[in-house]
Amino acid sequence: MQVIKLIVGSWLFVCLIVFVISCEFTENQLVKEQAVTFEQEIAYRQRKELELEGKIKQANDKIKSFGKAIRMQKRLTRRDKCEAERKLKLASPLIGGKSGILLREYIRQTTGKERN
Image (cartoon, rainbow, N blue to C red):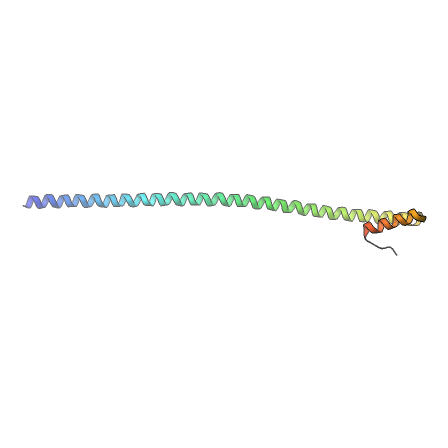
C-alpha cells in the first residue's frame, strides 16, 4: 500500500511539474508573440514617420520655391515700373503731339501713377 501511494504521489508530482513547465512554455510563447507584434508596430510607425517627414520636407521646399517666385515677380514688377517711370521722364519734355500723349498715357497705365 505504501508503495502504491508512493508511486501515485510520484506520478502526481511529475504531472504537476510537467503542467507547470507547459504553462511556462505557453506563457513564454505568448510573450514572444506580443514582443514580435510590438516590434512590427514600432517599425510600421517609424516608416510612417519617415514618410511624413519626407512629405513635410517636400511641402517646405515647395513653399520656399513659391516664396522665391513671388519675390521675383515683385522685383520684376518694381523693375518694370521703374523702367516705365524713367521712360516717362525722358520722353515727357521731348515728345510732343499725339505720339507723346499716347506714350505718356501708356506709361501711366503701367506704373499706376499720375504725373503732375
